[in-house]
Image (cartoon, rainbow, N blue to C red; front, side, top):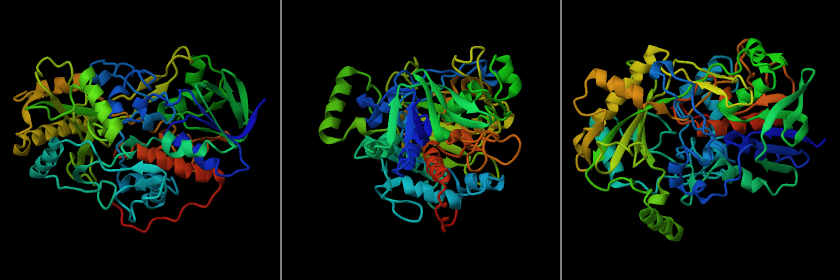
Length: 532
């Protein structure tokens, strides 16, 4: 039977970081297993390829269970199925959240995870083309750049947001988070900088690193109270030092439960032999729910219509020859962070301006080009679950339980109201003809009905293998699974609370810090900057 020192399960954002960092020790063998394929399709590397990613290409095609507070809808729930994971199919937005997010983790008992302690791991990853200071580094492997494909409507949006009352912020990841501005993007030289491209490709020449794609892991093998390897469709593989799950906030708890590690009663109901009763596995699912206002533009001020062959072909040729034009756009390049709840200590609403994001296609009332302003409540109180189906090998039962807490609904609707007010500002009048949805003059009831029908995930699941020191925690602050030796989880599932931002950058930081914990290295020196 083949044996490696470390087996990393899941080649997503955290998994690629782990494989690269662990294999820096030449006398340690590392195996990375990814169920999805290589990222050979050119769309993975073109920034605008994001528009094709949330369905089909690079996705498992999963859905939620019916959502009780959204009229029983099943929402499409994109989870990446490709090397690089979410970093290979997302909108490339690089935001870290608020300092208070991480300080709250530490205050809850997660020693070593405060903002000052995590910031050095953000900086270690980052190769920022513009910023190099106490908050940023220009030398890391991950390309981080300013948008190249922003259209004039983006500047008009920023003026409108400022007129509405949101100040301009040149760096959401710096001194402060609040305000409107351009997002930094995980791109380098107008190409997507995924975790696979940034971390894994430079490391794959190492003799001690093996990367296998298209390999699904069936279960973690446990002998006594120790994880000793994994079982795949091709047979078992042993791990001399340990197994690290990095399959994401859905995949990691799903695999733990299929391995007999999780809530004992649930496992027995599904016919899975209980290896270790760990009730917190699959609990605490959190996600950001997205609402948007949709407007019709006065002209070709968005990237709508890129699905037409002739237009797409011209744009593709321009990109290949000059690295300019529509293909360089991530489609969500401006936005902001602001406050919905009175007295909120930090921003609790995030905005994304969609330059022809695709959500407006198929709307009969929209006769021309469309633009969206998306809003998401960042600190949901609702908690959901990941559970096994009656057939444990079938796709997992994903229940974000959106709006179970009425506070989340109230704040989400307030965010939508704010978005509508911004889109109605005079600065956008040369670009925006009218609000199409929810529709100018819509009643409170009609806005609510629209929200129930149109809400969608922001693709930010977290928390299902929660880190902590209490009995309900799944992993300790060193990311070790409680009660099982030689087994860790290192991805967004360990986050006690979802960060107040997009989650790719925080997941990369978890991978960076997790690699040092596994290697037994001293933590990087804490930052000495004031919190944002």
